[in-house]
Length: 239
Image (cartoon, rainbow, N blue to C red; front, side):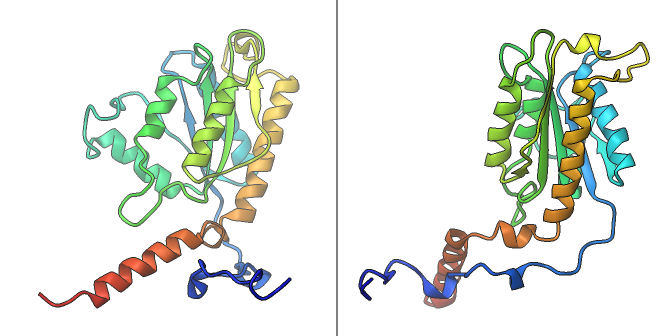
């Protein structure tokens, strides 16, 4: 390859960071992984909430600190400002978390507006902080009929747009009304075992990613933009 073919005239060399093992953190955090769980129904017997509550028990057993957000009382996006108490509660939990679980019923072939509203209240950035970037994510859904994956597929797209690390495994519980007893506890089944698999994987990914997320999500394009903005500010003429 000639020197011309190997040249990169469009690259800002001072902002080009060559990936290496040495740039990963070597001292792991010692606090429990912080997992936020969201569900997508306000029904009194909400199966997405029951899945989330069962998930919280399992995550606690795996050694996580868990918090569940109750969407009751959360206003529709744009109907209130971000100072609304429920919006502030949700944003604080988003910032607190290192990993998340989203579980939605499938309604009309998609996730519910209840879950989507929670996500729509979370901007890509708050000031200079990106509240979801680099956090791990597990997606689950419940269905009233046969098994489907429409809702989890949509949530994966949202996770990507919110710059989250969505784990490969996922859960879809068909005919959810048959999978819980009168006390709201999930019965033994292949569906239950899959949820255990998902949460075990989420814990592994969270432990792996949480101390590395700043490095993993660091982007050349944003470093170049930041450098250009700094240069313009520093070099502007005095007024």
